[in-house]
Length: 196
Image (spheres, rainbow, N blue to C red):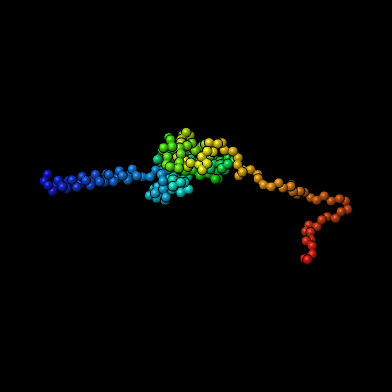
């Protein structure tokens, strides 16, 4: 091999190595479920993942997921399967209650597997009271740390949203008026009186 052929060979090798390195770096930087995001394009250029901006620092997810269909070792969780704070659960069928929404959550083994602001927990427990739609019901996922973490382990009972709260009001008599014999019926539309 002469000098020119050797240089051409080295350039071809270095180009190949550069392409392989670039492909590897792109593949290793592909966002996963649970990653930080601002826009949905931060999660996927293909539009198959969205950024849930209601979560702290955004959360890459797939909304309206189906059982066992989440990518990246994630779990399909049905949140708000019941009205928060109510003992009554109006979940009907696989789609859940009218207030429910399913999304993919990153699976974890411990809190260290989750980003700052999230903890590794069972979504079925309070305060989340969610449902795991996947076959594996023992999955832990990275969930937002509740505002009042001290109450996170408390059992969910009924709260004011479910209770009848208001002033004491006497019962309204909606029956027909009692009229004794010979008494005239009261007018249907009583006169409001003089304009004075």
